[in-house]
Image 1 (cartoon, helix red, strand yellow):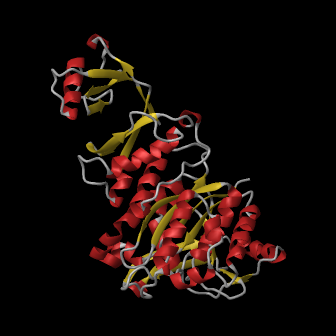
Image 2 (cartoon, rainbow, N blue to C red):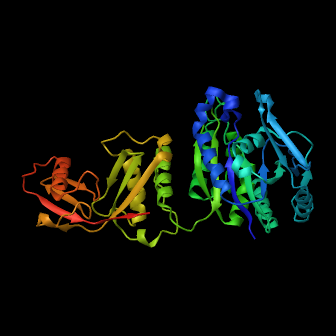
Image 3 (cartoon, rainbow, N blue to C red):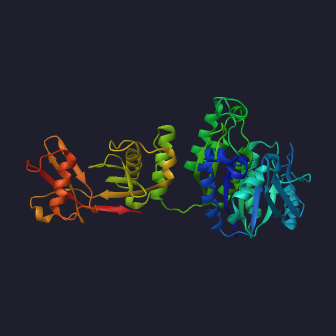
Amino acid sequence: MPGIVAGALCAHPPILLTEVGRLESQRVRTTAQAMRELDVLLAGHPADLAIVISPHSPSSMTSLPVRHAAHVAGDLARFRAPQVRVEAIVDTALVTALVGDAQRAGFALTWAEESDLDHGVVVPLYSLPQAMANKRCVFLGVSGWPLARFFAFGAWLHQRLLGRSAILLASGDLSHRLTPDAPYGFRPEGPVFDRLVIDALRDCEWERIEGMDPELIEEAGECGLRPLAILLGAARAAGLSSKVLSYEGPFGVGYPVVAFTPAAGVFDIQDVARRAIETYLRSRQLIDPPQPIPAALREPSALFVTLRKGRELRGCVGSLRPTAPTAAHELIRYAVASAVRDPRFEPVRMNEVRDLSIKVQLLEPAEPVTDMATLDPNLYGIIVRCGERQALLLPGIDEIVTPEQQLRAACEKAGIDRFAPLQVERFRARTIE
């Protein structure tokens, strides 16, 4: 087995590289950072082959062009950066076999005209040196096929490559019509298209892309949908899942970086919380928990979500009692609340989300405390109440080591006089990873 073991949708703006953009490259530093993350991620999936699809490579209305020269190269001289150059070795035996096998399977592949590698290839390959090390390549263009045909070809390609180990890079930007100063001007369909694609990739609900309105696609002025469709077809056949590493559009063009890796089959707490925050910041919508929900999160539970950026606290909000049907739903709700509704802090910004560390603690039911000697700040959190005022402190706060300190801090947090008549409860909290 394995076929396609990993892949990515890669934005390809030359300005991403400082050799081209210089100071202007700072405006796409989020994309550059995501590409560095992607490089490490893909390098962790051993493969001897890279399939690279670019919408700016030779194309045909009826056939999918394939490069067949043994050695290919390209640079960014047209962007005044000739020093940005990549070279690659083509797996000529494989591409020869692919053309014949694809034609017999009903997919028209043809030999591409000889030409230098385009920026849709050069930018991703230059940005992914670890992932591309020691790999032979297959370079594909695009054609005028219907979108569903690209999905089908991707699925066929994965099956055809069983026995090899390959990564698949779909090079492409999204809409070029996001703002009035965008390359193709503004169309309202541009932002709609990008939001639909990114949300579908984030939620791993790729059928929403497969069923897109052709008029929406046309008006969006995109360039990456056909390479992406091949990748999605292959990823579905290979059992991969998509993870959006970044998306931004500072120049009126949507720049996505999306990793496709084997579905882990586990509920990744950090990933779910980040996705929840990013989706809410972008659309003011709450995501649904990915399936399957792990057993530890299937029952209702109160919980707290703590966000830190380095050593700096950026938010900590939670529930005293369950407010959602499952702890997984509670996690999503309070990850967002910690990011945007903790009154002690400014709301988390989109460019901060990737830098957050996220701690999730499930709260066991609280029990009344009548003897302060039974408190232990390392083992128990406490809830204090007096009239309408109340406050909660989680266990394990570094600065609090005695019950007296814990009680005093809780009263200060609630604005309660320490010597007022108090109701005190204690609870255990379990950190979930």
